[in-house]
Image (tube, rainbow, N blue to C red):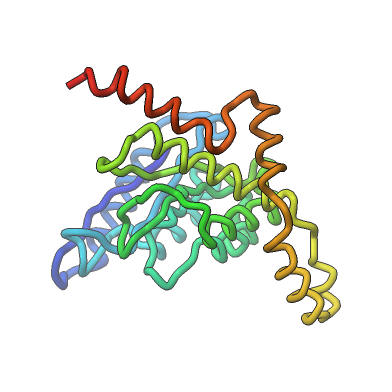
Length: 239
């Protein structure tokens, strides 16, 4: 259950604390309703800026993390990979937060200049996010994963399939990566760099193809024709 609001100001505000105190009190009121924290995970999500709130965002990263830290028995922090400054990366924040929080949540998306939520690609940051989820034991329940993307200019079904399969590929790549922590801990930086670079060209496609076959789903190169036929036979007739 995600709590996020895009409140803020387009230009420089006179009062930065007042809106945050009201937002804090509002979340307190929401979370005062009874719920089973073992089953329902309220999340507090931050944002750096957006259209109409270029100068000031109430629910900033500092606010959201502080609230979650002070209310660990009621909520968990949520990081949206499109809600940070373009020079910030969420992958590095995952182990930082897991050093203090038993659980965190993610909205995995692809930002372009701002929170535009483009379809998730198998790009470097997606792969790094997956690596940190796996390395930190996130697949055992510590990291709640959600995807957050849309693009009205392309087929929505294809967008969903591409993004979903790309995250699956990234996680599979991470699971296939050997643990090189011992090289880092021993200060063997040369071999660590060599091994990390060698891994980049290790075969992966057949492992992914076998995973698709085991799940009885179309392989890459096969599913698009199915989605295109559905678009022609069903979606276009909806007007």
